[in-house]
Length: 150
Image (cartoon, one colour):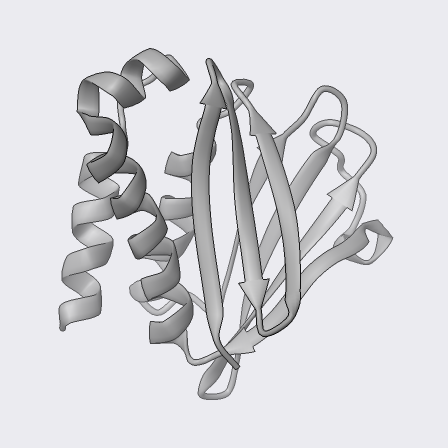
């Protein structure tokens, strides 16, 4: 199963991630209400450090996408869930499943690192700051990239 992730900022404070596995493609969006790229990289770095579970929330107006990562033995599962309320306190099983995949951890974490690297390389630090309104999470990306090399 091949996994691809792209992240594109399409106007100030809004981005879209496209998740593709084989013939399935889903789009997940986020607004400026939280730093979506940084939150995704922070979840990935926690997983790279051995966490068994991590999540991040990409906020909409209204609603949210919750990215939920769980280790399953040698593999890792990602489920992206949709909730109608922003900052929902509902349990994961109350969300609508948007995308799900099970991958080797290095494959999943590399897809996140590659997507963030593509954003940085295509926009640069200044372009990202202008488009998102916050600095690119360069330290988090560097940490994740370093962890993947170990």
